[in-house]
Length: 253
Ligand code: OAD
Image (cartoon, rainbow, N blue to C red; front, side, top):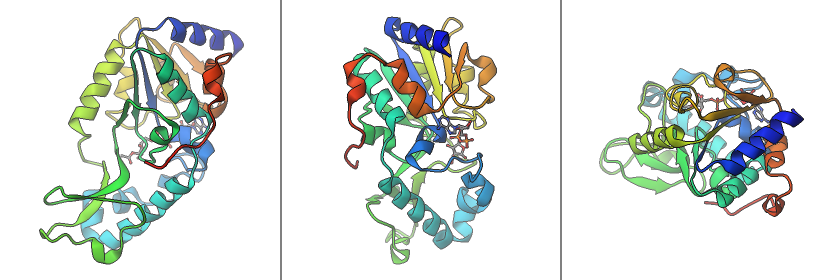
């Protein structure tokens, strides 16, 4: 991997525009489970019950019990060296966009600024009728699910069968299309349209780098695959630069 690391470092140094796409793998070393790996969320839970409008209509309390637990786990988790390195990379870049499929807010807590949350986030609940929002600092109590307008508060995330936030996805696609270097970190690349940011959006001469311990659906589209974990590989891409010494942690958004 040493030669590849050196090449990616050099490409990043020369790039005028960088786009990163992340998935749940980047938060694995912060103690949050992925979706499809061993102990992955979709191995032990039913997507159609917990992550679909129909599941929410059937049993909103079950859905909220699960998302309350996930939000609590996000708040307990701390950004890891991978999140921190991406924030440092943004600070030294002139044009840097981070498109994430994660709803855990760890990129923001690590200090990333230009973050596009393709699948939403769990910082707020949103009324499914009028769009009103309430912050999700603790858990949403069962008697707070009903909204006065007659609608119901739901997690402000994208469920299966739903469209991604239009503006966030359009900006991510533009960023991936103008990037000289596209970093794809910790995602299986199995969920569209997010995966297309790595497979279809980049220009033919863009340099696509996968950072993942395992081969994925993205791998054959990548110019280089760095086979390691995000918290190991990402800081090494910035090695020798003082900013990588930024402490882990960060404030709650
Ligand atoms: P997956 O569970 O499909 O994939 C996680 C990826 O992370 C795998 O390729 C792992 O090899 C990799 N991985 C594991 N540990 C890692 C580490 N320490 N460093 C780097 N990579 C590591 O999760 P996602 O690709 O995020 O959507 O899933 C995409 C979407 O599917 C999610 O956003 C979610 C889910 O259903 C919605 O909920 C809408």
